[in-house]
Image (cartoon, rainbow, N blue to C red):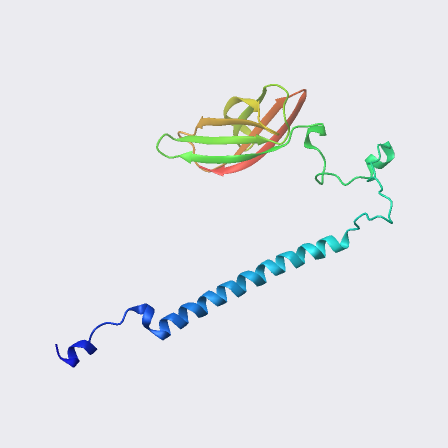
Length: 186
């Protein structure tokens, strides 16, 4: 074997000083960063604990204050939500959440959401009106949902109709009633 053949022999990576040095440098950086992160976590725990007083031998241990059950204090608490409870309103309110015309079957599909929770089933009467005259009418049961109630789906034929029509939904339930109105182009 000649000398030129032996010099072309590959040197393993662990014998190259640049690779070994680079690996050691990366290892040192990872260790330093890990130590700094854990040090910051420990120091942040110390800052949280510094604001709180820990009982010691010189300080007497006190019990935490119990919440007041005075009725006057209960009224001054922040409400969970703003606005009136819709269940306390004297009438039913809501919105038509879906209305679309199926052109193939000439059917108006609709659904109504009632803002109040009905204790039992109610009723929704769906009127399709033009110039205050009722053109089509149908009804659906208003069923209670989690915190509200719903009517629908409501389907009504629009065969032979065209133009702008008014939708009127008359809701009844729990001794209350309400009316929702909207328009649709047929």
